[in-house]
Image (cartoon, rainbow, N blue to C red):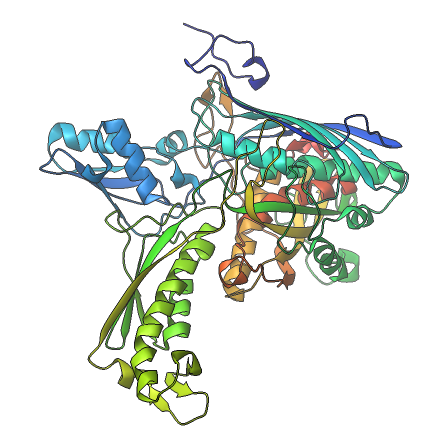
Length: 624
């Protein structure tokens, strides 16, 4: 038996595990003067463990063989056309001989964009010639889907005496596990965002993603960006301590703004209100200490009542700010197609964008209701007979599919208004739809929308395709991203410095949302992202020995419960509309998940004085 390669650092020199070798990608990033140095230098080595998406429901599906030798799959998916194409390729079939019908809400956080059991399910149906239903156990689910990339990050920050960043040097290593999946994409984000949302004139990074015999890593909120955020924010805390500068102030002094250059050489053309986000977080009052409210029961670290001495509890406050990219990157063709049909007073939206809980169906209804003035809007179920809308990840459905729905609705609106305007000898642009009525600019016309639609059936199909991007070159340079979103956070923790138990008391968030189309949904998405980030910060780590998972259950893999979830306060939803985005809106779920682990780690660092260089934070890391 061959010795498994489980240490990513040894993968470079180990025997090849695949004909393509053990290196998925090496991405060097060279920006500025390699000889530049700062007056103050801090270094650090950081490690991020393997986080599991932990979907609400384990994978399940039904496969039905077709007379033409193909197969029809009924299962949850975040990328139905991608799953169809990859499954067909594994089966040796043309894509049109595999049909995928999306069944309900996947209850997953981007972990179902990669293949897991689809091919096995389809093969069973093909070989038996009978419908086959499969439902994975929780343990099987842990083995079937991909996980967050474990990472090792070495950093060196240079700054002047006032704390202005001069140079960032980094080495980033991602463990991609046994299969390639999206390791190349995750690596691009980690390298491009390696200096964070800060102005740094000189950045030199070497980033690698390697193949090992460990469980495969894939897409999960903020892949690549999260690992880098933990490292560069830890470095900012270390730099602030060395200079004797407030951690919040050192971030303000280096905050990125619109027009600045990323280390990839790409100009930040979208709104980048990093300074405003930091100010909003700082302006929120801190939660009271137990001595300020002596009659209130104090929930100690370790659970209700706590297990240790209240005198051993220390409170810490930590700050972090991070960034994620919107849509695909490095030349990915982002496109979505939508059809809007209206018959009588009911409108139908046909779009293969899967709603995984981010609220796309609500958004699509809002768009059609606003554009066409109807209240009854039905969203058709998703299957691969519809034109592709792409994967539900990286905030793309709000932007791309929402944009396609809006374009189609506007085309239907024009069909509706044009004959009415012609009857009155005016342009359709002089008519408006509001409160269920069609009115003219001069008040002469006032017609209910229902009357105008009576006996008519109108429909239109439209595509939305954002401006193209390009791959990063051999020096890590290029306009690789469509847009960016930013988030700032303050975490407050109580730490029992004798037991190492940590309780997150409060997380305050300020987020760049472009335009808040549905503020309540945005707040829910932020709360979910924070909770997932707190899980990685303190609890969640999927462990492997010799490439085999050792804790594939919710008894061994700990998720945050209601007792572990802090109060999440929204200090600000900063609305600076991105002019190239549909409706000016940005996605809300990934950024808080990226920033929360760094903020919680910073708060533990402040409470204990310990360096905290590893996620999740273990009890021994918080003992003083």
